[in-house]
Length: 483
Image 1 (cartoon, rainbow, N blue to C red):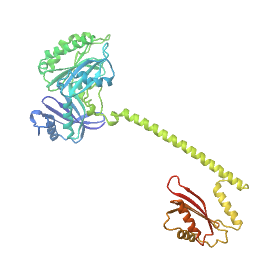
Image 2 (cartoon, rainbow, N blue to C red):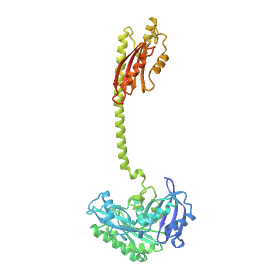
Image 3 (tube, rainbow, N blue to C red):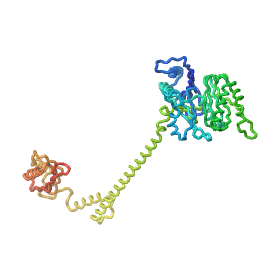
Image 4 (tube, one colour):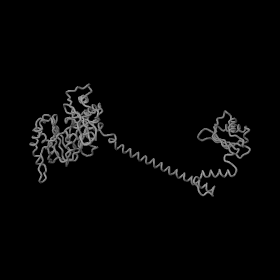
């Protein structure tokens, strides 16, 4: 995977924008800037603060290499809910989730985009954790970035995304309480058996005091254990941003307030308990969140009409069904063509067999037959040559000097001009002419006969056939004319 993408960290005060270069094994930030909302002014009433801030970002950084974006939004923009549902089908949950969340989300007059995952908790098989964000916010991000030909592929809450990144990197810790601390927000994510099962965000008043924040974390853990009926021991992982100045105070308070968690953890014989509180940095955790590589249990709000899935991925089942039907149709066409071809080959073989039989009956002395029609034609010519005649000559001495053009000219003169006639057959052989065609009625047939009898070139004119055409309002006739 290679190329660049835009990463945006949005908080209540501004945007931290970074251009991330993706290499084969590592990623690096090639350019970055910080834009405060207080320093920008929308160009008109239709532009929001995010769009105005992106205009400033575009002036400070080169966004040309970026076609995709990863957007981290503040924790306060997300509404988390834990719900009990009577089924586990993801399709059914997706259908009814908006109705289940309707009474829990603020601003019922606005739409929300929601994401969820199932919790694997004993005795609570149908418990889900959901996250929702206002659709207006998603629309704002897409509209502003579209001006720079950039498409968001990931829109996720930053603190929760850091917990998902830690879960992705650290396979050795199945159960932990992930505390995310930043100057502008604080969030707690409880992970049980490697599944995020509870999320809580804290107000500025709570994160300002280490003791109050530690008490809030402890209350959340106790509430989770009481609600699920299990006694889970959580290791504490504190993710601290560099600018958060109270990290030491909060970590010390957590160690004191949650000391009982260390006693709940199972310990193997002969081993020592690890530290209760582990501190990590968010940069390495968030680096795993890239546009085209999903991270398990991440809440990504690019879905539905904002989804990053390709056309093939979105409509895979319909395309697969169409492909199967096309293959079946093509198979039937080829089968039908094969059957018709086999029947045609049988007919050709029958005709060839009949031709060979006729040739053998005519020339019994010939034992080798390759092309019966050509061989018979050559043999007939040779026989006629030996008999002193040539093919195509007229043996009638009386009519040897009669010219075909003269016959046609005579017919044209003797047929009255007022008669509408169409000649369809003209066969002249050995002083006999067979003339066929069609005209309007039987009277015209008699008039044509009378006209031809008046010609000195024709000795006898007989009507061999005259009948009404079943398909057209015409009379078909046939004359036998002797010269």
